[in-house]
Amino acid sequence: MPRGSSKAVHEKERKLISVIDLSDGSEGEIAEKVIAQLKVNGILRLRNHGVPAAAIANAFEVAKVFFSQTAEEKNAAISKDRARRGYSPLSSENFASLVGEQMKNDSVEKFRIGPNSVGDDEYYSTKMGRVHFSPNIWPRNVEGMQTVMETYYLAMEKFVFHLMGIIERGLKVERDYFRGKLFRHTSILGLNYFPP
Image 1 (cartoon, one colour):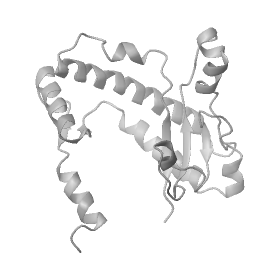
Image 2: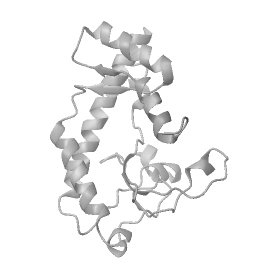
Image 3: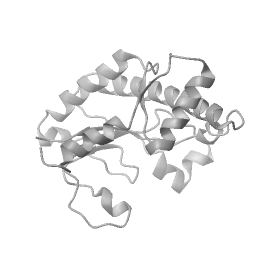
């Protein structure tokens, strides 16, 4: 393989990302490992993170079913809001444009969801609130997808709060320094499909 090829570069970068087992060591030791890895390149690979294997497997399974549908079936769940909930077809978005660059549109199909339930107070109901807390859009033809994805979203949300606690400990900042800022978050969970 030629030096500098994308596969060789990817493998070199992967070696810089050690796997951290979140069940191996005291809370303080784990926090130190996480912070040390984040200082290397800002990327973590984690094992024994507590996200149920079934939630992950079920999400992969519904993703396969969803992305194997016809374009017409997928387009029924197309995203029509600024928060980009639902389906985004192949080459319909351009990530580079978000950072001021001009590149070809992204060769990926996406399906995204946001928070499962939100309140009805002014925070959510204002014009800006409705932009960020648009309802999730669900496909008509993928049985159980909503339940599977909402379960996965909640599992990942719980994990992120746990990870923020580990980072707080590693940085020696007060408890809930980061977690307190995630209150009423608008996090998006995406399924990506890169066609061959």
